[in-house]
Image 1: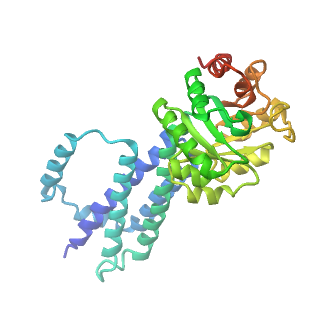
Image 2: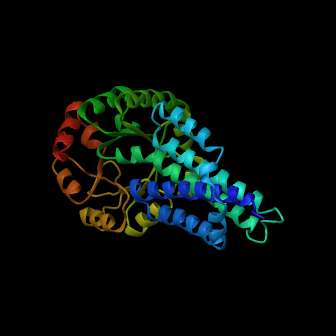
Image 3: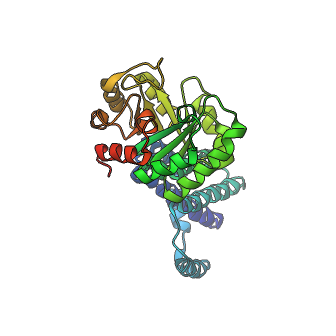
Length: 354
């Protein structure tokens, strides 16, 4: 006697496999992420392995021609085609849910006495929970992808101690007008209560101009003003903890001065890596000077965007970009000038980003 339950298994196996394949292709072709690609491929292969003994049985029970749900699915497709186009995160969510629901259906059917000799329910439960985790990782990468791509050009650090009382939002406005692509707010001495309204004003300016806004050190301020990301050093909270606490769409940058630190930062989830000090700098007198050669070595060791920092000015900025920096961070080269907008524009032009 035919087991009609196998029709449900067959349909849901197809749905799960199709959803996983699309997610794998996003990881492979859009993100170029070999680790995520392999994880999705493993899920597909494990699913196929668990059901391979049912191959002929499932085909024998398939009856697509007389499926009463076919007309309903067709009507649903026509209705969906009339809706506004979905973005990539929506596509990921839809296909992950499709696969997860299908795995849960097979998991429950595998508990039936007529099915359990052929399928192991706990295996599909394990696959489902593995997919929950990989889905989160994929969504995190996609949501941050646009911001990561925008980590180019001039990265200006608004150090409040260097600004010495000048109006921070006004300085930020002039940097943006000069062509700065990323602004970081840094204050090692002031109170967070004082910094909060300043950060909010700069965040508003950056949002209106498609400029990335990063906050140095303070995870709670990133959350309070909805900044684009956080920048940390070697003595701050570990990257895995920061990644756990930050929303998945926030970028995290990490300062390094060795190849091993750069590799570790990338492996632990840094979206970009700041390398320095490239040249001697008056901003941070105790900084370790690593030189352009170290930047080249790190460029060969990691794939993450690199932000060069330390002693960079209009006379040497071209050396840094030639060495593989995705972006160049400056402080004094802009903040020490009377004409902030003009100084920013000169550096941008030197980088070939005008």
